[in-house]
Length: 360
Image (cartoon, rainbow, N blue to C red):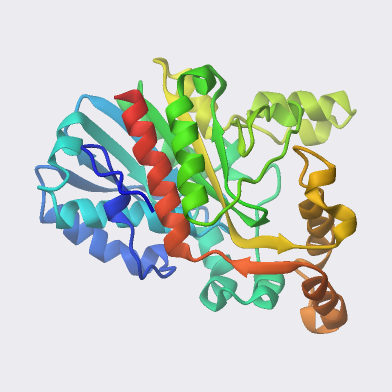
C-alpha cells in the first residue's frame, strides 16, 4: 500500500497483529499510557453504560483544531474501536513521530461508545472469522436503541458522549467508525457540505482500497433515508431527519419516532464547518455469487449483495445447528472472504489521514 508519510499520516498506527480486545481488557493499558504522557494525553471516564460498564475517552494533543473520533455505536462492528485504541497507543509510544499532528490538532476520542453491546457480541468476536458463530451470537441494537441515531441523549451512552464532546465544539473533523458484516467492498460516507471539497480524500481512499485488493461497494440509493450517491463507493452520511421523513412517508410514524439525530448531525449542529466521515468496511467480502445476479447488469446497484443479504439476515440469531443445510447452501452459493482486521484498520486510518489533510 502506498506510503502516505506526512505530518498528518496516521497509517503508522496500524497494528499488523490486531486482535479484537474488549474495552475492559484495553482499559488499564490506555489509562497508563495517558498517565505516562500528561502533557499530551488525558484519560477520562465520561460515564457509565446502562448496565454499569465504564465509558472511557482520551484527549490527545494540544492543537487549536479539534477532532472528534468515536467508534462502537454499532457494537457488532469491532474494527473501529481497535483502530482508535491503536491510534492512542501508537501516538503515545512514539510522540516525537507525531509531534506535528499533536501541535496542530487536539483529538477527543471515545474508542467504544457501547460496552454493553460489545459484551453481548464477544462470543462471535472471539470466534471470528467463523461465520456460523457470527450468525448464532451477533447482537445489534434496533431503531429506538441504535446509538448512532440516538444523539444527544436517547440513552445514557449517547448523553455521556455528547456531554464530553460539546464543550470542545466547534469541531473541524468528526468521524464515526463503522463496518458491515458483508459487502462487495469498501464504502465511505461524507457529509453533504463537504462532497465537492473532498475530491482528494475520495480519490485517495479509492486508490488505497484498490491497492488493498478491495473493490468499492457501489450502491446508489437515490437519497433514500438520506443516502445520496456521490461516486462509486462514496455516499453522503445518514441523517436522522431523513430517516424520520422516510418512515413518515410510508405511514410508519412509530418507526419514525425511534430515530433521533446521528452523531454527525449533532456535531454539525454545534457550529463551525466540520467535515464528517463514516467508514464502512466489511468483516467478510462477498467475492462471488450466482451469475443471474451479476453486478454488471445493474450499474450502481449491488444486486449480488442484496440477494445474499436477504438470505443471510434470515439466518441471523437462529440456532444454526437447526438450519445447517440453509447455511451450507448459502455459503456454497456465495463466496465469502474474511477481510483481515489489519487491512480494515489501515483503510480506516487512511481515511482519517486524508480527512486531516483536507481540513488542514
